Length: 267
Image 1 (cartoon, one colour):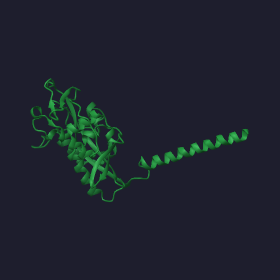
Image 2: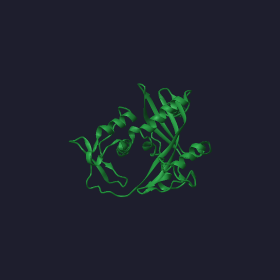
Image 3: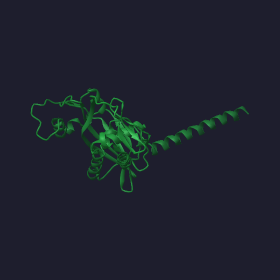
Image 4: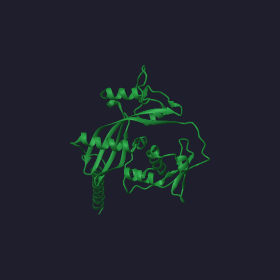
């Protein structure tokens, strides 16, 4: 009887191991890049498509999260509201008086993330965490909070991006790119000579990717980052292997590409 009991334990152990191995195989097959994604043949064509998408929707507002997010629907609602606001901010006329039509934000989020993307109409906060715009249910718009007084502040913007790899698995595309960021204050850029390859580094002004010395005058009509952008464009191969990477997972549905995931790797 004792031998049979021992055999039963062995069988249970083997079955448990089999279930673990099967589960690991399923995970690797369906939830990771293991054996699924291959380089696309039409890189140049797709690179143009995705560069236009990243630029049109200001995807730097997603990239600056700088963490791995398998399903962007699982972002916090504050993150969703921030992404929508900063994504459409430049297209709003006199929002302090006219407010912000919720439809603009809703259309932006669904055009970028897909028609099933969910979010709640919570207040839009300033960079200090105060309520800047409050949602009015009666008017279905965001109205400026009159108790929010003007104040100085700092921020970070991305002025350069380049796609370096596109891999495909069925209707999913992993688009990997690099970026440069610029730190600025309410009085203008803190420095037009320091290049940062991550949002967080620019925010803290640490770990510069490179530094240049500006000796000439910025050409008329050009932005303050003109010489930084010129440096990366002229010497990209020198820096590309040292730069952090942002990988956006797009899903193609009915001919449209929707952003569904993000991964980030610092170097």
